Amino acid sequence: MATIQTSQTQPRLRTGAALMALSGLGFIGYGVIFFVLNFTDAFLELGIGPEQVDKGKEQIEAFSPELYHYISHLQIALSGFIAAVGLAVAALSWYGVRRGVRWAFVTAIVVPVVALGVALPAHYPWGFATLGHLGLIYLALVIFLVGAAIAFSAMRGHARA
Image (cartoon, rainbow, N blue to C red; front, side):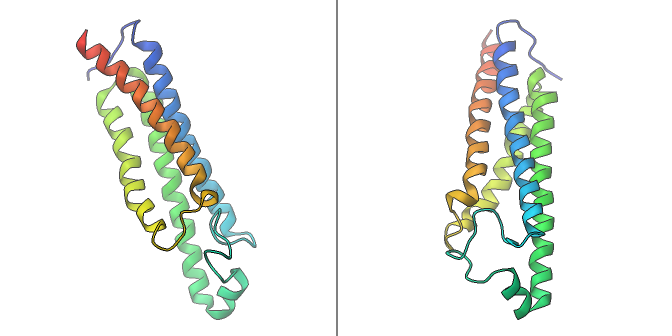
């Protein structure tokens, strides 16, 4: 297992890894919000309102209790997967990237790329890509990308040395 342990690259590597881990914690937070909203009167996801979905919790449940339970189960399951992605990113970044472990860096990049690469495109055709809905994810993504760039530059700088 190749790691980076030079005094020149270590501060940048730690900073980049910390930002990547912070973004993972942001994903966990988003998953928790997603989970909690499922059990409130809001029912639908953060940032999704009558402009996107013209029926609320009561109307969906009145129309079809089975559909209501199905949507609820999807939201519960998805909240778990969002939080799991965040946990994976945070752990890989904090315990692997911070030490310069290249496979941890690559995996920490691939996990959110796959998750967001599948999830984000479906938001746009139906008007679900509101800032209220995706703003926290975009913020976490920007923090992640800054951290990944810093960590990558430290790892790349070490490879040249």
